[in-house]
Structures are given as C-alpha cells and as structure tokens.
Length: 382
Ligand code: GMT
Image (cartoon, rainbow, N blue to C red; front, side, top):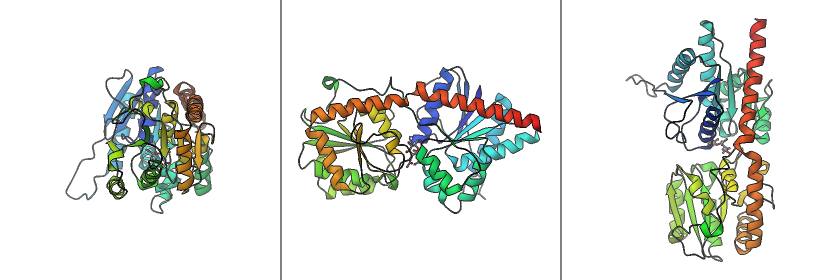
C-alpha cells in the first residue's frame, strides 16, 4: 500500500507510535510518506520505503498565527496526487482529522478519492477535544473519517461517551519493539551517577500538568528517607521549572537528575529498578509499556487505560489516584524485596510481549484493507 501518515513529529507518544508504525509498515513492504512540520524524532537516518514531506506554513504580516492547517491541507493534496497515495492515516485528531477531511474534499473535485483513518491518542479526546471551541470540529471530523481507531478500550469508551458518534471505533493498542526495549542482566546494569547499592527510579514524560511530575518528586522524597536511591527525570516541558523548584524545596537536589529530552530511551530504561508514572489521566501509557518491555516494574495511579497494560500486583502496582502514601509504600515494597521486584520485572516483560510490534502492526494493515474495501464498495454505489 501507499500510505500517508500525518503526526506530531515530537517526543510525545502519538508521534512515537506514528513513526514506529510507519517504519514497521515500510519494513513490511509498504511505501510510507510522512507529512508533518518537522522530521519525526524517531525517524533517524535513511529508512528504505519511507519519505518525508515538510509542511511549511508561509508567513505574512497579516497573520498573527501562520495557518498550519491550510499548509498541511495543501501538502496533503500535493502528496496524494504526486505519490498516488491510497490511504491517509492521521494521528491525534486535532487538527489532523479536519485537515485530512478538507484535503479529501479538494481531491474529490479532481476525481481522486482518498480515504482517511484517524487514530485517537488521548488528550485529543480527554482534554483538548472537549474544549468547546474544538469539540464541534473534532466531532465532525470523526464522523467523516473513513475509519477511527483508539489506543485503548478506555479511550474508545470515553470518545463514545462524550461524542456519541454514529460510527464504530476500532481499538488497536500501542506497541513496542521488544528487540530494542529489553531487559539487562543485573551485572550489565549501570549505576549512572550512583553507588552500587543505590536504587534507580525513573520517570519519562513531556512534563505537562496532566503528568503531575511533582508527585513523582514527592514520592521520591519519602522513599529516599528509607532507601538509598537516585531519581532520573527524563523529558522536558512546561512544568519543569516548577518541578526543579520543588526538588530544591525538598532538599533532594543531590539525588535527582534531570536528563532532559532523550531520544534513545531503550539505553536508559533497562537500568531502572522501578518506573514511576503519576499522570492524572493516561489513555494508554506508552512510556510505561516501554519500561515494562525493559523488565522494569511500574508503579502508577490507577487511571485511564493503564489497567489494560499493567496487571495490578502482578506486572506492577496501580495505586488509587492521589494516594501518595500508598504510592510510597508500593515503591518501597519493590525496593526492599528483590524477590518480588524480580518476579514483577519478569511479569512486566511477559505482559509487554502481548504488545509487540509484530503482533500489533498487522492489525493496522488489516484495518487499512477493511477501510479500503468499504470505501471501494461505497464508491461503486455512487
Ligand atoms: O494525549 C497526549 O497527551 C499526547 C499524546 C502524545 O503525543 O504524547 O499522548 C497520548 O498518546 C500516547 C500514545 O498513544 C499514549 O501512550 C498516552 O497515554 C496519551 N497521553 C494521555 O492520555 C495523557
């Protein structure tokens, strides 16, 4: 198939999933064209079968905001025509779904019919999608998508609850490359900046308010009173200055490292003893899945779709939202009991194996084929 993928080219989960999907599809013989405003971060080097088209909104003194959607639509029309794309797959509804819809209408005028699939990732429904300024556009663009997928059952239900769509939503969970994200033997584990005996705790996020990174720091401040440990905070975003201030206020600067944005998480995650996730909502939790693939047990709040990947008490711990005391207890339980930690580490890896790219990417291929078939049936009825 000749597939166009639209996504945010950033470190965030939706961009990572879209990029890894595009690379896997290309490895399976498809031709994939990424259309976005920057080269996706996980698209490093030359990948056979993968092409990248930059969207450059031209500036003009009249514009307070350069019109990205218009530039994206123009580029979609051009790439579909020139590269003879058969299907578009847009990741994160806003503003990609409405842009694909308009491109579809423009191309229809020229006798080209291009179906598009929208994959919902999380805040495009649970947060921004519910904004009353965006909601009518999201609803319309989903109603007009040729196919919709959501990354978890939770997100599917949440979308149906809020938008009451007349359409079915297919759940295709996120996936991980188990050959890249894999556990290390204990003796291979590096104790970055730490003494041998110190435990390593990690958190990865885009430091947005929904991630509540302050809670990670508060949990760590309690943990470190009982166990010698270091905390590695990976990623960057708007909350970072606040989190840095909190670390200073709690007097734990010497035990907390801010590593900033990191491209190769598979080089860091296997060195962790426990991964902490304190999001107030998480439609899937790709970072948690990547940690689990590396054999790292996750302690997280029991929110959103996390229970679809973490089996409480088996492959990690799910703690009631906002219950910092229980959160601390669960982390300490793991750090003080190596037999339990190892058992959970193995269970975490086994659970992650359910989400391998070998298992999940074909589900997208099948869905593309289904949508193409339905579209050709409805085209022939016209
Ligand atoms: O919705 C977001 O916050 C953005 C998005 C991203 O680009 O990072 O994250 C969402 O999509 C990921 C990939 O599908 C999921 O693993 C994350 O759980 C989800 N984030 C939230 O629901 C907060």
